[in-house]
Amino acid sequence: MNLPLPGTTDDRVVGVLLGSACGDALGVPYEFGPRLAEDRVPEMAGGGLGPYEPGEYSDDTQMAVCIARALRDHGDPVSAEALRRTADAFLRWANDGASDIGNQTAWVMRRSGHALGRPEVAKVMERAAADRFADGVPSAGNGSLMRTGPLALAYPDDPRGLAVAADRYSRLTHGDPLASEACVLWCEGIRYAVAHADLSGVRAGLDLLPRDRRGVWAAWLDEAEERPPHAFSPNGFVVRALQAAWSAVVRGDFTTALRAAVRAGDDTDTVAAIAGALLGARWGASAIPREYLDAVHGWPGYRADGLSELALGVAGRRAGKR
Image (cartoon, rainbow, N blue to C red):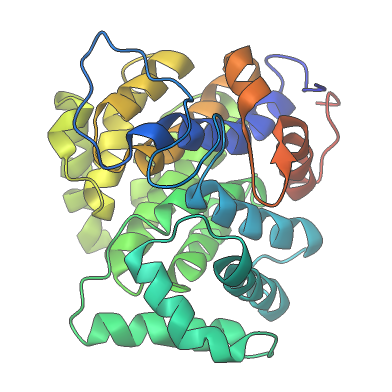
C-alpha cells in the first residue's frame, strides 16, 4: 500500500477520504443500534443493515466517491458540467450501486431519475429537493453532510469558494438551509485541517455563514464540546449528526475519536464517516490503524490505494511530493 509520507500535507489530503471510508466501515455493523459501552472496541465486522463484508463501506462513502470523481475530472467544481456529472453519478449509483440509501436522497433520486443523462439533470435534482422542503417535508437529514468532504480538497486556499460549493452540492438532494450550513462548517474544518493540521477551522467557518446564523451554530458547537457524543442521539438530523461527530473529534486522536463516534449509537456509519473525514484531515492517513486500511473497501471496487489516488487526484497532487 503506497501512502504519502507521514506528517505531510498529502498525508492529510489522503486522510480525508480514507478517514471517512474507515469511519463508515467501522460504523456499519452498529447502524441504528443502541449506544455501545465505553469499554467496547468497535470492529469492522460487516453485516449491519445489509450484506456488508467486513471493512466494506456504505452509501456515505459511495456518494463521496461520486463527488470526488467528478471533482477530479473538472477544474471548476460548481461548473454546470461538474454538477451534471455529479448528479448523473448519483442517479447511476442509486440505480446500480447503492447498498443503502437514505429516505430524503431516495425520494430525490426517484423524482429526478427521468433526467439521467440530460444536461439539466442537476437543476432537476436541485428543484426536486427544493420543492420537497417548500412543501414542509423535513429535509435536514445528514445525507449531504456525510459526503461533502472531498469538496474541501478542491479549494485548498479558497474558503469562500468552498462555502459556495458546499451549499450547491448539499442542495442537490437537501433543500433545507440547515443541511447546507452544516456542510459549509464541516468542509471549512476539513480544508483548514489539511492545510494546518489544526481543528480550529470548524469555528472559523462560522464567518462563512449568514450573519444571523453564526450565533446559533456557535451555541451548537459549544454544546457538542460540553457533552459526550451519545448525548446527540437520534443523530439522523444534520445538526445532531454534526454535534455527535464534533463531540467525538475533540476528544482524542484519530482512533480514540473515531471509536467514540461509533459508540454514540444510532446512525453510526454516517456519524463516524463525518467524523472520520475531519479526523483524517487533522491526523493524516498515517494515523489510521493498519488493520482498517487493509480491510476498507467498497463500491465501485476501491480499496485504500484507490481511495488514496482519488483524493490526491481531486487535490491535483502526487503522493509524497509535499
